[in-house]
Length: 191
Image (cartoon, rainbow, N blue to C red; front, side):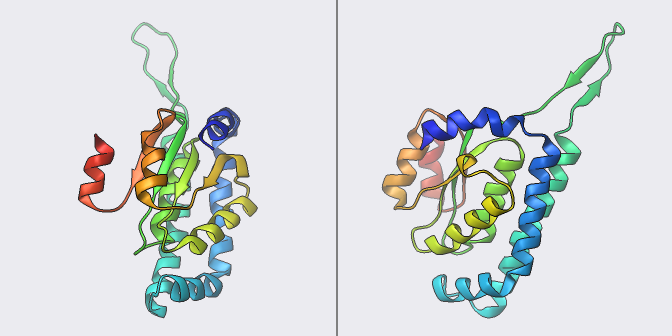
């Protein structure tokens, strides 16, 4: 999976920023229109209350739109002053494969925020959701694919953090890690 994501990184990063942002906005619109379906899934799989489920779907929608807006504002090429009259331009781009490890208690919102931020910046993503909430993550990945994120730019990897998460974090092809969880595990990842 990491090799496939690494190979796909160049093509995903080469897509125009406007195209990557538009995919996130389409995902936000689709998620908003399917709010009841995602809320029902959050209630059944994550044992959320209906009110918490509605708030979580709204937060996931907001993450998609926020990161699309932020990317367009901060990742576009910036002309820098040239002290001797030359033209200098700062271009920011994706770094490679990002590993996203999200928690069980916000299985849609945090999962979506981590994945959306990495994708819109031009990274490919190896997403490892909490093992307690695999269906929420699977449905969100499908929604992102339907919104224009290619399947080779986003891989969903289910399994325990101790094995799957640890292997992803230890893989030297990982350009970065997004993690939400315990302080103890964060310290291990940091090392």
